[in-house]
Image (cartoon, rainbow over all chains, first blue to last red; front, side, top):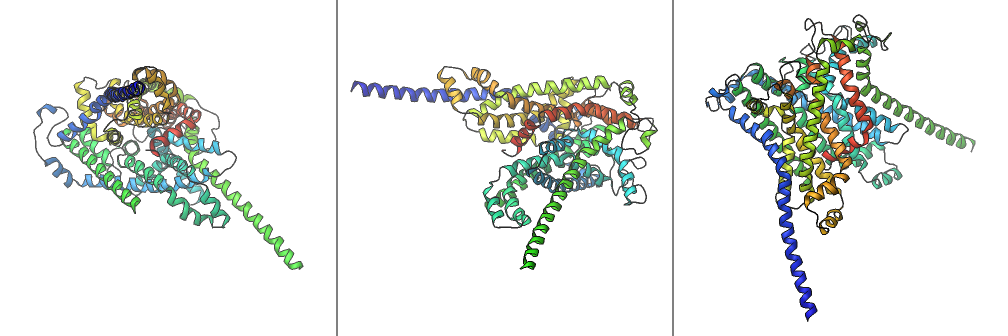
Length: 310
Length: 291
């Protein structure tokens, strides 16, 4: 009797300390997160709030304190500006074309790297090189290769006989956006390839074994087995890259400045904001970019979830 | 009978030939991949070693290396200062974000509390922010702190993309450590603070190197904020300096100098990436695939 009572007592005590301990732990958790959350609120939350607020005013960069509230005027004006729509179109073309090309190329490289061959480690290192090069540097490197008179690309194409006359790749409106897309593809394909390679290496090997024994054609195996199994990885990699591409700034800015033929949404907003000093109008453009990308993300995730359930 | 044997033999020979062709094609594909990824940087190195007139001829090998471009870069603009700026900004960004993120990742990876998943997704959401969406608010914030044209403005603003990323990756790493670790420490009566500093930091060493390196590269390469929040050429970071190198007119860009500057800032990065290759790949995939 004594013994059981005693036991009961300690168990109750232990339960009590454990809830107290866990409550204490939760308090510690918030304490540990507080500095990070404060900094994020300071550098992300507050500036985002201010940008959206400025979008409804006629503030100028030189004297932001004289701002007046003007409702949706900035947005109305923005939607009538043909240059804004060109920027939206350029960004959409850039994002979808480069991500599509990167996915295909990345998949090819990932499948290649997934095979066993001597020097595989070296190749995996080599494809990391474009990823490691700063965007500004790759923009300048390619600008030089694209140079209409002295560029190596025109030289090679003329040598092979593909073109008769040198092409002004970055200056001509027909090829300027394409040139930028190709640089982005070069720079970001490695990221895609490595993500997809990681995905490939997680796939179960049994399916492949049985397919090989049954003598199924490799292409059929790829489309019927590999691709469906790789779909979750593909979806994640594509959304990461699309969100990155939709906010593109540095590549476009360094390769062709504020040129309207290639201007992306981010370049447009920064030009209005900094070069033209339109704090209010530029902020309106920035908020709209934020809204577009947020909306796109929500739609993409919803479609992906519905796709997974079916 | 003889015909049958011959048929079998040719069949086997055909199979062998087929395999050989496939092998050749495979190695051809490998060569194309390597050429595609490596050639542009190789071309930048070759161009950086050419004098003014040699630049205008296409030679795939520098005839006699011309080092003057590497000297001119430092003479014609404060490029040494720009490199120092980039180093100061990137290193401080990495140190601040790692210490803030490590504490937060301990809480999110090891402690159960309500709203944890929501919080993680909010943080992931911040990392998806287009930088331009906070540009004007950030500009005002920096002006009101008196940090315009000051390197501190860059370290501060870079938190917006390094912090969410480091928190996310470190939380994933934290979760993978065995549960018994802290249970033993709690039984010994250790406070969460001692648990983090004495138990987790030593174990998180590799993860910290990986995330620190990725954050360093992101900060080193950043362009939009650096372009907007600095004014004088002494305050510029490397990407802004390289983007704004200009000649007498826009048609006479000093390509030799630009290529030399590009090689100077890229070679250390490439060495870092090649040395830490495996860690970087695991960090990138931890951030994306598992998320």
